[in-house]
View 1 (spheres, rainbow, N blue to C red):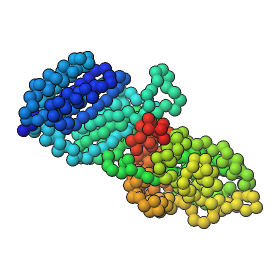
View 2 (cartoon, rainbow, N blue to C red):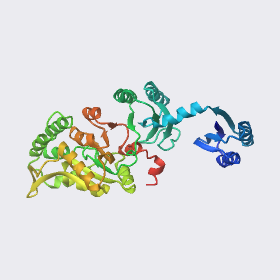
View 3 (cartoon, rainbow, N blue to C red):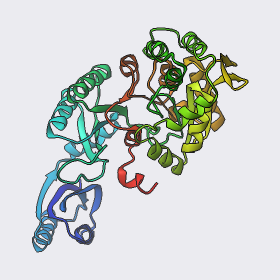
View 4 (spheres, rainbow, N blue to C red):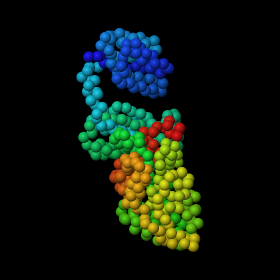
Length: 405
């Protein structure tokens, strides 16, 4: 049986190391079974798992590699791998793979220690760790800084619910976000992203802003809060709130639209998704007037929202047509997926309120964004620490590719 060697090289990164090393191995007709390379702050770590032909003498290969390393002031370790050990390694590739994504304003050793402890406690083995966020300058962090580390882990997860629960406990204690996904073919093959509007794409509940101008701000805001927490029926609460807006001048809509603040990261996220060929949609329990305004500003593809009835320049206190509630959002999401000819696993849904839960639950990736407690607890993923563009990290898209998009 052919011999197997594990070769690891470390030291200062320099041009031509991989080329020179593989040229030496080529002289001995070596086959490459696995290879990995990483550079952190000009420090190189290169590993190769190689198979030697039967007629090849392993000591000669090791000596040649050692001499190469000495000429380049590198450190090298060469060790033999038994056929049994190699077979076990090959068999492990059939195990499920998971992605754990750590999102924070900055990364600390305590965060990594506690996350990796949970991973180890559940019997998973970390295959790779990658920083997806850009390099961080020394000194005071810039405003709205982003930091993300992605762990790729493999193994048999006996209790996914308990694993997720422990990750959420760590996230809560450290005030970070932790996302947990199975690494399958859909993860990097999403095609449609649907967003709620109020308190998701914009940092306000539009109806509350209108109510302030109508002199019923506190009354409407209290109803909105209960509806978003899932304490009262959304459709009925919307009719009640809209009735309180009766008599509001139509000009107030334009005034509120002009003052809406786009959520952190939304413009960057939508621009990147558009460049990458994604379709984007607003599925809102708010009003079409504002959703269209946002569509034009962000360049989104689809809009579905509620039509506020206006007559003779004033709000009548009624809604035209059927209400876009939670069930309708889920129905529209299915409709858009069918129109695009894609599986629901290729769909991402993002929202903050209880009326978003139906669409979050059927999407391949459902994300509660800065959401109410009920939604955070129920949704598969949750982001509260960073802006909307942190969603790109959940897709495995690093900052270096985002900047090109």
